[in-house]
Amino acid sequence: MKKPALVIMAAGMGSRYGGLKQIDPIGPNGEIIMDYSIYDALKAGFGKVVFIIKKEIEEAFREAIGSRVEKKVDTTYVFQDIDDLPEGFSRPQDRVKPWGTGHAVLSCKDCVDTPFAVINADDFYGRNSFEVLYDYLKDIDDVKSYNYAMVGFILKNTLTEHGHVSRGICQVNDQGYLEEIQERTKIQRFDDGVKFEENGQWITIPEDSIVSMNMWGFTPSIFEELETGFVRFLEDNKDNIEKAEFFLPNLVGDLVRGNKAKVKVLPSGERWYGVTYREDKPVVKRAIEDMIKQGIYPEKL
Image (cartoon, rainbow, N blue to C red; front, side):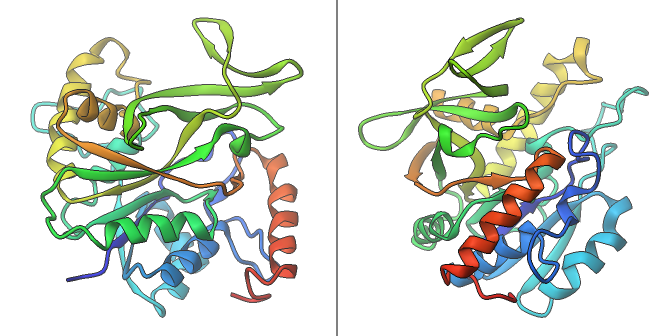
């Protein structure tokens, strides 16, 4: 059986960060966050890397990371195209941002035929997160099954001090399976606790809540669901089509509620690091330096 693949979503525009954060160096020898994710994934056992990028950043992306990765593992590039829409639909003139994480994963349907992991390009997940996800995916024999997985992080370990973040807030049952996931696009720490914004109100949320960091484990069965889900999304959001996003967690939540898929939540106590905002970069750099001193990573990957 082929080894599971690692799909990396790197087509985001980096608007809050103010630059192409996916290829911004944070390691002592110019390494970027993806270098550490791929290093951890290969150590865990993943056998293929699929980059989802925008066509216009291909040259810079290949130069910054792709050319190095190609020497280590089977590597594929997939382009998330804003004009890649189902028959009968066209892009609104005012639409400039990608369609979201669900559309991103859908774009790689023709090049992934094994169980696979999905991660964000600009998030640092930690070694253990890749290990637990690989151990789950490697035992899936039926590529058409609806047995999925999600690495669950503790909310307080995933916040930045420099603004708000988006997280999928999860409800997990006693057997460790996902019951509900709700995407919250504005979560922030305040002096009196962690809160999310909804309809102009800030609502308190427990800081030990389990959240999704878009670190998923799927089989290729997800692609058919993404195709039908994207059509439904376009039809349901006609009045807000310039800004609406097709979120991967929302589709997974629909499948769980409809008893069509089971999602095993794999706990991770890892601390998340990311560069949501430019002010986050020094924090990530210090964390990497500390992990090198601890022997978790070599000085030069």
